[in-house]
Amino acid sequence: MARIKKFFPVKVFSLVFEILLKTSRKLPYLRFKVSNGAPATQLKFLKNSSFIDEVSKQTLVFDLEGAVLKSYSPFPYFMLVTFEAGGLIRAVILLLLYPLVWLLGHELGLRVLVFVSFVGIKKEKFRAGTAILPKFFLEDVGVVVFDIVMKYERKVAVTGMPRIMVECFLRDYMGTDAVIARELKEFHGYFLGLMEEEIDAAPVINHKMSTHISGLGCFRKSHNQKILAHCKEIYLVTEAEKNTWEVLPRKRYIKQLIFHDGRLAFRPTPLKALPMFVWLPFGFLLHIIRIMVFTSVPYKFSIPLLAFSGLLNTVSTVESPVASVRSEEKLRGVLYVCNHRTLLDPIYIAIALMKSVSAVTYSLSRFSEMLSKGDLVVCPEGTTCREPYLLRFSPLFAELTDEIVPVAINLQGQIATALGFECTGLTRKDKYMILAGNAGII
Image 1 (cartoon, one colour):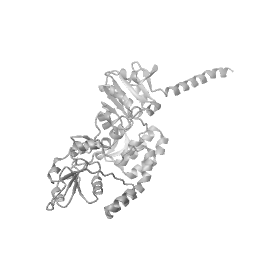
Image 2: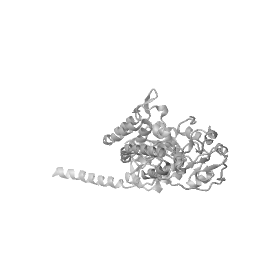
Image 3: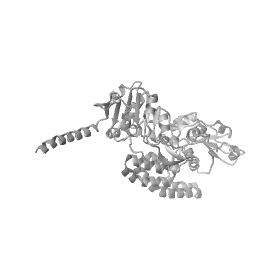
Image 4: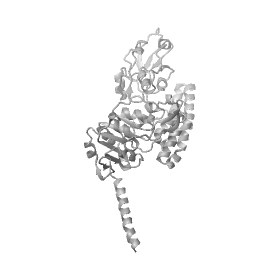
């Protein structure tokens, strides 16, 4: 009987604690008040407004995956690295290993992702961290927590992913002053697929930060405990709260995202990557069939066949501002000017015109020679831009022919208005300097 009386209070205490823990996970943020680095002594719940009000000239240490990104899993970002830098076969292997990654847990699973994604990749040619990943990170940032982070004067980011994947995004698009992340080991310029051991965050935080340091993390992240030692206040974001966040809109970016690279147009989560790989063989076969139809069948018959295969086009025509009557003695062809959204633009123009046309994509030379043989398609931007922006047009194309037929309307500004794009003063050289570190000379 005495043993039962002694055991009963322990069971009651455990039950009450479990109820409180489940209740706390439904609240937006938890605040731990810490005094002079001592263990947490007080717990209270805050709403967003009170969280934002007390941050003047303070420092925020935030967890990228746990508190800023809506999704907790880093798998899509490693899939992007694997697909773009490692190739198709490596990406399929990574997808097949996902169940193992899930079973191993966060830390061991992360090491598997790093190894498969980076082993054997040449460091000098790795550009995914600057050319590809920032776009997908931005599309996963919660607008609520973005507003909170931007309120702080100084920001330090903590992440479990390798530094080479996240540093460009954090510095350029989150305005962070420092990034606490692990480096990748390398040998003779090639990644070994292994990360360095955990780094000490104290020197980074204490070097340039204020005396009052706040932390923003998540319940699920293990390295939150290491942040606690350096922060006077810790805010923990719940999974329920993250599920209600809206994605940061493009107009709120602190830096315009104009240039990015990559072959994937969607975020490759496991549930999206699987149907993509299943569809690839069928898509490749359909691609071959379309090419054969387009190149061997007359336009009058190939266009309906292509439409039957799912390739639908909308063609609208406008009257050319230049006189459309050309003298019989005139030998030079017509110059068709279009914005350069994809490398397939000249092909679609040929389909719309129902006749073969030549195209110049990378060089402005030999224009006159090509025009003397027939009509020509030129993209005066000089390179593709996958976002709704128009690059600066080169003025050289306007001097090559007497009759110019723009594909859209006449002027760059009017093209931008018609397409809903924004004009920029950037050029092809700017794009390649940003994405590849060279002038794009071929």
